[in-house]
Length: 231
Image 1 (cartoon, one colour):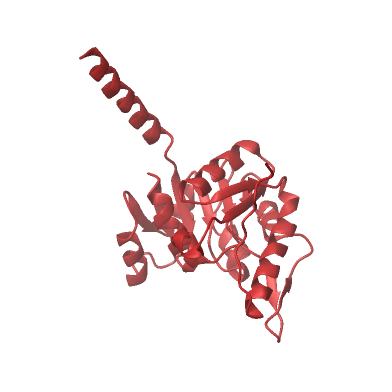
Image 2 (spheres, rainbow, N blue to C red):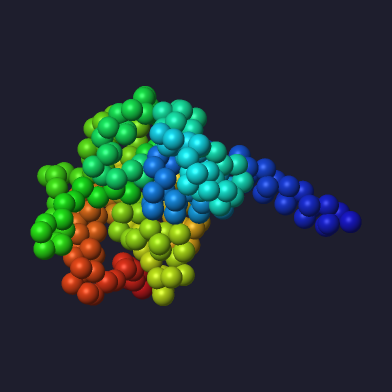
């Protein structure tokens, strides 16, 4: 009986720890990326708030319906104010206006899956800025901590990693070790491998990885990134 009581006590403590470690995540944007990551993060026990200019819209409500646990939709600024982590899942062209409309994000983690790229007349992708989307987002929200992640794969694989046909690596970067640990837990929690590649200035290189991947796909040779660890 004592052993059984100890087991139940341990399980209870684990449950309390899981709840206490749960975050509220605002997903700003309800397109392909937001619609993929929001439901997946909810499977880890996090509360999800979708930030939408039309939170009552039918497709937004449908997204709430496929999201586990506590999920709702609010205007973007309200969603961000209530969250610990803000996922900037808007189109890059809309990112600056969207981010600056969220108000003060000091103390929050911003997860940036954006790519500041342009597509030429031949369908080839190129860098659109001299730095990176992540560094620009950090400059627009100086009190927040930006972590780059999820920019090197398609939304369909974010939603279902098994469709990749094998393991997929998500490289991340950022200037704060604790924030990267939080995002790393999200990455591994939904079925990917994670590699920390350094400070936020590495985001320019990560966005270049998306350019290479996109151009290969446009030329009929699509691939995903998997980093084989050195033994």
